[in-house]
Structures are given as structure tokens and as C-alpha cells.
Image (tube, rainbow, N blue to C red; front, side):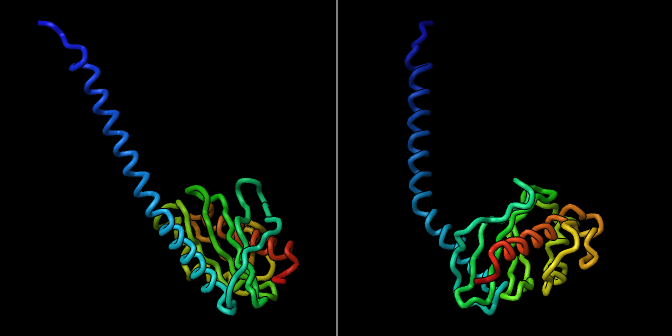
Length: 189
């Protein structure tokens, strides 16, 4: 029986390459349509979180100055938004947690007191690890202006979640970084 090289080897490869090209162009088109919508939704969600953390603010402007990095690659300020009416700032901090980087937003009023903390992204273990992200746990940071230690367990002003020390420390370290950012900026300006 004679083998036909084109039908056996070349034709299937050409068909698969054509299918891959069609799928690639289709995905690129869908991405070009949905990317702006996803970005708008992310901005709206972040603005809503800022308004929730600093209710006295009217509008926000991105801070363009230097960002605090307390532990390179592990605890750093990602962005800061200042309230246009001078009522405070909202600091977005990333800290190394049990499941990778944890992102939290910290509101700080013009007097340097924490107005609220919200964990916006994490990879921590659902259940035990995320107890340090609960609003009831985060409520203890309201009013905080200073910290005694960068670890939750070492700071007598806060309680940590037993069995979730890494997650508790990540949240606490983020609040500490936000307070340091506020000080480095010279206040809410």
C-alpha cells in the first residue's frame, strides 16, 4: 500500500494551524471588547472601597510621590489616593501572606487615625486563614495611629487569630506600612 505523505502528515498540520489561528484571532477580538469593561469595573470597585474606607472624602486624586517599602517584595505600598477635601488618604498595600501576596486598602483620616481596613485580594486558605480578613476582626484597627510591633502577635494593641498567624501578621504589617506611608507623605496634605 502506497503512503500519501501530504494526506497523512501535511494536511492535518495545515488544518490544526488554521484552527489555532482562527481561535487566536477570536480570543484577541473578545479580549479587545471586554478589557475596557473589566478595567472600568475594577476602577469602580476600587473607588467604592475608597469611599467606604474614608466616608468623609468627596473625591480622590492619585498620589504621585514615593511609596513606602517596609520589606522589599514582601510588604510594600502599591498606590495611595488622597481625598481632595483633605479628609485623609486611602493606601493600597501588598503583603506576603500564607497564600501569596495579600492586597488590602487602609483608610487614614487627616489626624493619622485608621478609619477602616479592607482586604481586597488574597490567596489564603478559606476558613481559618481568612478569619483575619473578616470585617469584625479588621474593626480593631479603627482609630489606630501607632503600632508597637509589625507582627500582630507582638503588638499588644491588637489581637491575632490563633492558627492563622501568617494571615494576621500580613494584615497587621499592611496597616503598619499604610501608617508609615501617611507619615512619609507628611499627612493628608
